[in-house]
Image (cartoon, rainbow, N blue to C red):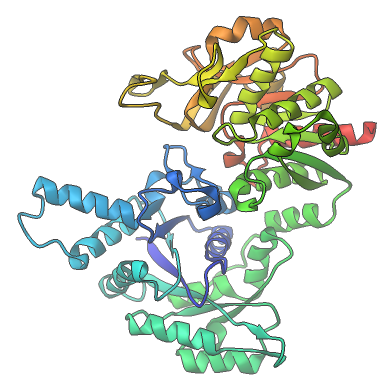
Length: 544
């Protein structure tokens, strides 16, 4: 029977609950347990897909097509367990489902209330699809005391009563701030945070104390006394040099040991952490470095490209090099050629990531042209592939007015809204101007690769499955003129309708993909495209 670890946060947000959940899950895995992590988001949006990256960071997409919180990316990268639709829920989705049930008459005319209806839905979500699991980690977003998170706190309180102490453990992540003027760490914020939580009926079993300075033993004892936990269960969590150092750091502080002890489990042999030690060694002892120019739209916020950032780092691990990322605002390139040359010449490779909208598109096209003409390794992802095709159409295929219908009416729609694609349920069709609009193509889809292509060599296969998130697609009607201009459509959907990958055989490394390979990259299993891209950047660094 699955055991539940509920993770809450207090004092301030951004304490790293997601990273803590991922690290703890990795440690339990290293001890031989099967784990899954879930995220409860108290906000009222139905999913993060409609939210600005500046509000919520990137939208993470699962194999089964869920648009989810970026923390699920941490969960996957640290555990290797593919996230599912059922691993992320928001208040908005819970209320939407409850109202739908009420409209259908499922509640037989009863008054619909937060308790029991909302809390029952939360409990059902936590306990769904847990067969074969040893531990389910449930992270509650936001901070304790937020009005919107109260139903979630109440739900986990009820679960403790229903399942018992042998099956539930509460871990509270809290801040112990350092006051420079006093030269001291202050425990009061943590005390108040725990007091708030216990007032709601939840007594933490373990406190993970985020602090910038070592937590003295007397302060540890003080927190334990005032917060009603064992001194050993007050775990210091200092800032780490790298997120991939966190599992090793938390193990050294005894987090996994204390969690098992709280369940009444006697920890057996020490966990096998060799793969984490290897990752850390590759990161801390590189044999060289490369600089990648990422020409994008949301470059002011690293979390907008969180998975991309990590996938590039993983490519570095595979090649034992440090990857420096130079984030470049695409709009800067819309002023003149000299700006492009000055910004991109020092780069060992160029990447144009995904995005939406016309803003910065001409800058991205200019970056593609630079990479093509100068033979600099180029990687285009989603919109980046579309920009590579528009650049190829304009400059090598003689289609001067090539554009995307996403940017407005055009006589040469090299990129257009998807009107049909194949799924397991059969052919899905959409009207570009109809009421249904252009619905997102979301989740994992197969692609067939040309046997003689660069990408089939990189993947070591001619059949792949990758995750998508897009409304627009390269127009298959332009395949022939684009190929005459030097582009090769080396990956297509199995039905042959949708272009998935383009490359330039006459270029050292020039690949555009319609999907998001960064979503499947892991530190201990770097995505082959990123490993190959960084290898090409290493080669380029030797040439310049």
